[in-house]
Amino acid sequence: MPRAARQADSDSMPPPSRAASEVPQATPQVDDDANEVAPFDPVDDLQQHGINVQDIVKLKGASIFTISGVNMTSRRQLLKIKGFSEAKVEKIKEAVQKMIGSQFATGLQVSDKRKHVITISTGSKTVDGILGGGIQSQSISEVYGEFRTGKTQLAHTMCVITQLPFDMGGAEGKVAYIDTEGTFRPDRIRSIAERFGVNGDTALENILYARAYNSEHQFELINSCTDRFAEEKVFRLLIVDSIMALFRTDYSGRGELSERQQKLAQMLSKLAKLAEEFNIAVLLTNQVQSDPGATMTFVAGGALKPIGGHILSHASATRMFLRKGTCRAEERVAKLVDSPDRPESEAAYKLDEGGWADV
Image 1 (cartoon, rainbow, N blue to C red):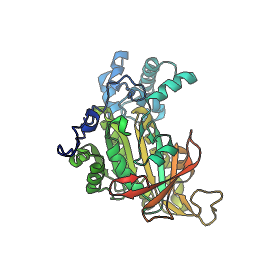
Image 2 (image 1 turned 60 degrees about the vertical axis):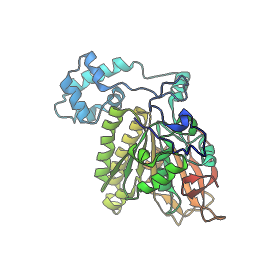
Image 3 (image 1 turned 45 degrees about the horizontal axis):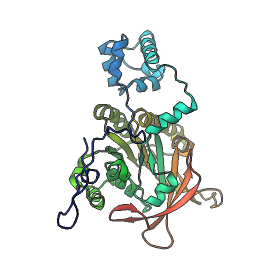
Image 4 (image 1 turned 30 degrees about the horizontal axis):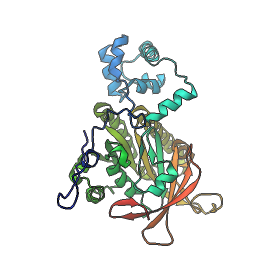
């Protein structure tokens, strides 16, 4: 259970409050619906509906740990599990349908469900403003831009902020970090933690880190996150930095483009399901490539466009393009390119020792 202890100097600062001195339980016992974390039903509950323990173990072996996870998995995929016949899959599906009930809901019911969505600050109030408060759970958010625009710095900043209390823009939870470029730096986490008065070692303890070396390994790590999310129930953010780096090296040329996009679509589908199933925020960083045919009038970024094609653009609920500012060396500009509920807009931010911050 994450705890982030304040580094307070008793001679120069007043005694810290509870919210400032430690991060409370990642599953808070609060009455405020905006801060309440939606629960999920474990797949073990299928025993009450006639599904034997052996079949439940097989589901877990396929990285399916919740009732929602079974519901999100197609019959075709379930049939690939060793020992599952069509009759057995149909029995499991029928049991899940009885537990879930009607899958249609009124708009008001959807609105009530959206109250469980958690919003995590980026570290910059101006950027939070154009995002409607920050990066949201139950969806995929993508940031893309050229080098030195702060993509990895945003990932590091949110590793710390996610552990903070809700009233400080955090989510009172842990972070899973999949690094595909080898750019994760523990010392950077410590310096950002110092900005927020958080113990650096404690902040690092609450980050589950893995280095991916190829696109298949990357997918395996994402699947293994399911086990940890279901077991610990305290994770609030999953970061993949970056989503396309390994695909660019594993697949080359137009001859392998179709296969690459198919694998990418499967990975993004898994990430979207994880976000909704466990009420976590998914943050993807992405690289860019030159697009000589584009113009500043029609395309955000002008001659630069994110890699991954339409499959990635449709999977990401929120997309931000990052570019370098023109006034100060440390200044950067974030442009909200796509969002389901926010208009296109821009905000300036800067990169300093404490991560993303206001200019």
